[in-house]
Image 1 (spheres, rainbow, N blue to C red):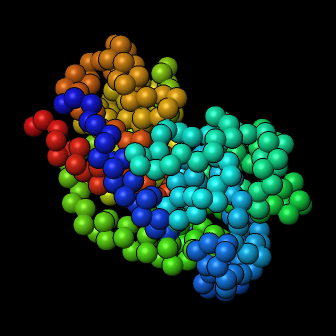
Image 2 (cartoon, helix red, strand yellow):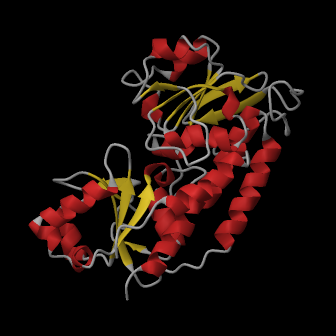
Length: 331
């Protein structure tokens, strides 16, 4: 089977993002329910206090100037109808779907703390906890001291005490709802969650009986989806059996020899701006160990865009798209 096109999954996300729907979040609490969809409307439900990765933050009103780091955070804000409040984005893992206006780009990878503060944000939302560290855009405590609220996707917390033991769609929906409250868009979040629940419920897991490797990056040693994170959640919903499900982590490294020994029926290739699916196919076909695998020889490749591989608004679309691609595999 030729490399599946990404048009379907990007088109599906474009409908979500341009519809300006909303989404839920994780280990959070609020002082009140409700809120407004834009800072120009009443600030009912504020102040809002939420906690992520062990850090608590409070917003007295819907944020008017938002900086996001990682595609998952950027796309969450856009899906909740607050894209016009993005003053800077960074660390994009791939293009936004067609029809979605590209927000201002601050940096290709982690921005400096100074460049973020120059934008005078009232909220910095990161997809990875490491984005807000000394090696990234600066520690969260430093922003909070200056009155800048911070939020990190709970699924990406580095301390196991603050991350789901086994990521599930309820955790994803919870993050959508939490971010919706932070942005003053709880109704949009509730609507998006309802839409995504319905889409997930309608999925037929076409991968039943098939084993799979989730290949994220790495040439000499592959970095793959393990048994506790978004890859496991997505593959399971599509009916696929993850050959690395026995590893109690979100991601792990496996040798190519182990991969070949476990002999997956299909290979899920993560397509990113910095490590494309096409490159991964070249790696698989040029390595003598993997080139002999039936899945490589028969080109049983499935693809997912990188932003869909982390907890966020693309996860349900990824399940839908994987089931479609599985259906198109040659018998």
